[in-house]
Image (cartoon, rainbow, N blue to C red; front, side, top):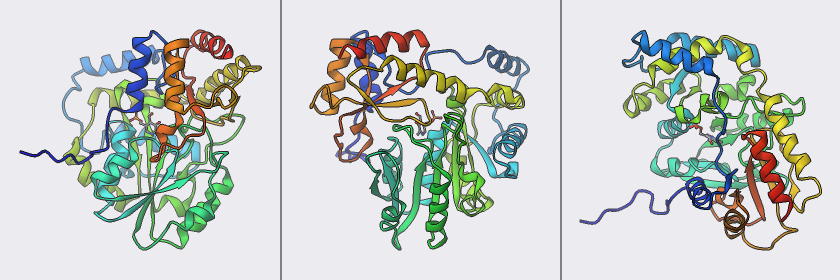
Length: 378
Ligand SMILES: Cc1ncc(COP(=O)(O)O)c(C=O)c1O
């Protein structure tokens, strides 16, 4: 029997590769995007409370009403937008929200515009739906030339995927980006998948420009969020998607056969926890302090730091240290110096080499300090 792979080009993800290498060489792991500090103990207590109360069977397919209501209130208070709780579906992390959105919308032969560097789940999800990824490469400074991007749109284009704040670059949309996107969308039949998992990590007094703020864009968009990123518990794999009625209906047709529903006691715990804004309103300041620690500790080093305006990532340009390609360079630094980073080439279909490595600063100050002392010596 011949087994024909549906994803023949897919191997181990770069995040597993670098994390394994870090483990093997006892290196400080600033590669994979997860915090090394604990989620709030109050959340543990809430989860345990609801488990003991007996909330352990299947939740309703779209998610429990109180959680969807709490999310709707949060959107109203953050973005001033009224989103009915019926337009919100609770998912197993943003990864499932992204995958399900793509399966629901993309038919074989449909084109999907992917802005690179891009998070690694987008392209396989498109391919599994039979879609064709069409790549747009960001400018050198990780901004988007919307006129150039518009030239990729044709009759076959079904979907545009955007990610704001952006992994791995840390760039964020300005109001002008949103205005330009509105202009493009008005003249097309395009849908948008907006990955906003880092919505609460925006620095230097900037505001997160959510698609949910725009009446024009919201009508065409599925917007994905992650509780794992919000509450430092990426291993709980919980998130949600916000979309207008028609898109939500299509999303749920896939969702109900993919997972049907997601973790019940966690949903009840999040519903309670979300009702206190203090549980998330300080996140930008918290991560900005970590970004600033990295900037100040790497001052005078041979790395050039690209501006990070959001997320918990910082791009390091190592062109003054080595001309090596990114994967060999970061592998060597992991093995010989003891700090693991991610090569940005992993975020491009053609493995574009810019001598850029991504550092994750969602780590304790002690760990960041120690890693920076090592990096400074390179
Ligand atoms: C841009 C982006 N989207 C989605 C995800 C996945 O989120 P989740 O862990 O909730 O599935 C990540 C995780 O790193 C990410 O960086």
